[in-house]
Length: 195
Image 1 (cartoon, one colour):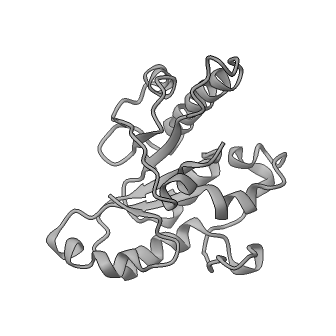
Image 2: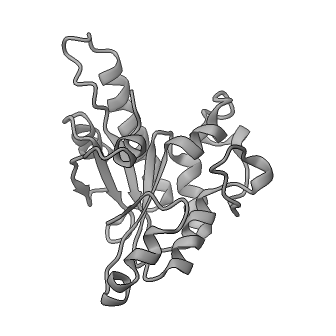
């Protein structure tokens, strides 16, 4: 299965709803409906990092359900969660990323310039000494890999590599200033899409 990030970066498409509900049942049902992605809102909904983890567990329950169907029943599209965080706060971002099992992504609102977009990317990446490869970006994300849900509490030894390959980072432009800066924002390494 190819990740949503890889599909989009190679010109593919994805369709999916924005979920404003804080209900794990609603999220699980949406994740089982066959969408390519599901945006779970933390900006305008009552969802926070604590209840958001329960929503991510619901998405994973739906993924488990799909992965255990026979190949004749499976659609080969497993819904990936995209978390719309409330703002550019790197501490909140770290909490979300520590709960998000990959593949999946984040959507950051109110990005109006390349400098903010660069800070967003840095918040999603570990310091350079913890990353490798040609696309490594120096980040500010603290490392708790052996202790967090995202890495299977340390069982997923490929987690840090997956962060570089499967974590979708998108920003949301919501003002004329942001629209005018789209070419600069799009040129920031690590920005995968603009919403």
